[in-house]
Length: 308
Image 1 (cartoon, rainbow, N blue to C red):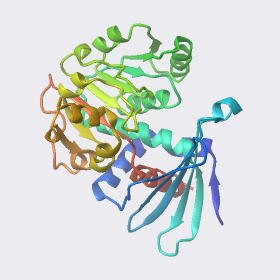
Image 2 (spheres, rainbow, N blue to C red; image 1 turned 135 degrees about the vertical axis):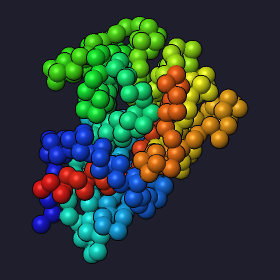
Image 3 (cartoon, rainbow, N blue to C red; image 1 turned 90 degrees about the horizontal axis):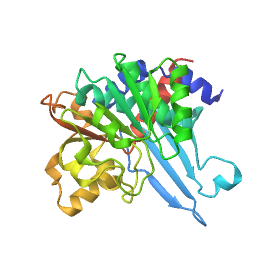
C-alpha cells in the first residue's frame, strides 16, 4: 500500500547524525543523477524534476516555484518526493518534499564541515533567518556539540530574533546579531542560506581558519559572497556538475578571472572516499558550495521509509 509521510514524520525519522552517515555512504557509493529538469510554466512559475536511482532505490522530487504564492499566503516553494520500487517501478511512498529538503541540505553541510572546518571550531554564524537557517544550526550542532555560540543575522532583525529564540528553546546557545561584519570576524563557521543576488559576506572579513558554508544560491544570478572570499578559499562543491552549472558564487569569480577552474579542488564524494583532502592547514579558509543534488533526496527518503 502506498504510504504518505507527512512533514513531522520525515523530521522525526531523520536524525542528523544518522542522516549524515547515510549521506556519506551514498556519496561514496554514487548513483545515477541526471541534471535536474527545469520547466518554465505560464507566467513566472517553474517546475523542477529531480530524479535519481541506484541499484537498490529509485525516486524523484517534484518541486514547484511560484513567486505569486506570497500574495496568496502560500509558500513559494512546494515539493513532494516519490519513492519507487527499483525492480518494478511501483510507487512505494510519498514524502513531504520540504521537510526532506531541509533535513538533507542541512545534514550535507554538516557532513562537509567534518572535512573542512577546524576541529576546534566553536562559533557558528547563520547568515539568513529563513526556513533553512535553524535546520543548518541544528545539523552543525548535532555533529559538533562543542559549539559554544550560534550567531543569527538576517535583514529582518525581528525574524533573526525569532530564529535565535527557537534555537534557544531547543537548547542551542543562539543569539541574534545586528553587525554582520563583526559576527563574521568572530565566527569559525559561516553558514549562508539567503536568496541574495549580490554578495552579503566579504572576503576581507574572514579570519584565517574560517569555514564558509554556502547553501542559499542555486542559480547563476545569485551571490552570497564576493570574489575575494572565493579567491581566499580552498573550494569544495557538492557536485561538479551542479555547482559548475548553477552556482553564481563560483561562476562569477570564474568569469571575472578571480579564480581558475583548478581552484575547485574536490566534490563531496571525493572527500568521503578519501580521494581528496579537505582542510590541509589550520589557518586555511575553506568553502563548501552546495546547490543540492537528487542523490541526497534519494538517500534521505530511503532512510525515512526504512524506519517504517
